[in-house]
Amino acid sequence: MYIDLSDIQIPDWDSKIKALQQTRRLLANARERTRVHTISAAFEALRKQVPCYSYGQKLSKLAILRIACNYILSLARLADLDYSADHSNMSFSECVEQCTRTLQAEGRSKKRKE
Image 1 (cartoon, rainbow, N blue to C red):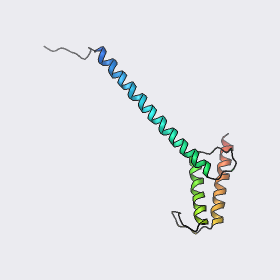
Image 2: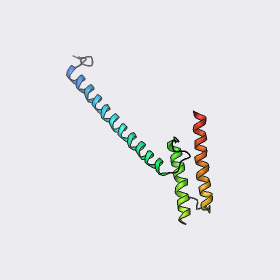
Image 3: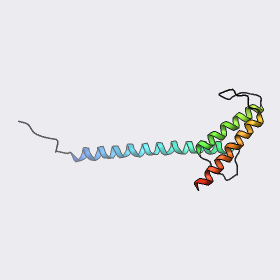
Image 4: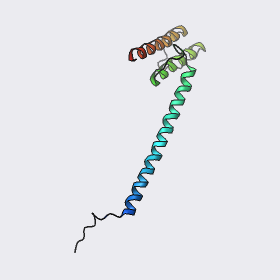
C-alpha cells in the first residue's frame, strides 16, 4: 500500500524553516549594509585627500579613483619616483595638467546629469 505524504505539512517544521530563512536573510542584509557603509566611508576618506574642482563637488566612486590615480602619479613625479604602469616619461607639470583635466571633466559631467 502506498501513502502520499507530500500533501501533509507539519506546522511546527514549516514555521521553523520560514523563521530560519527569515533570520538568515536579515543577517545577510545586515552584512551587506555594513559592507556598503564601509566602502562608502573609505571612498569618502579618499575623496577628502584628493584635490577637488570645488569643495562641495560630488564625485562618483569612479571619478574619485581616477583623480586619486592621477594625484598619486603627480606626487610620485614630484618625488622623482615612477609608479605608473606604462612608465611613461610625463613630467610633473603634465601629470598635474592630467589631474586638472580629470577634475574639470568630472565637474562638467556631473553638471550635465543634473
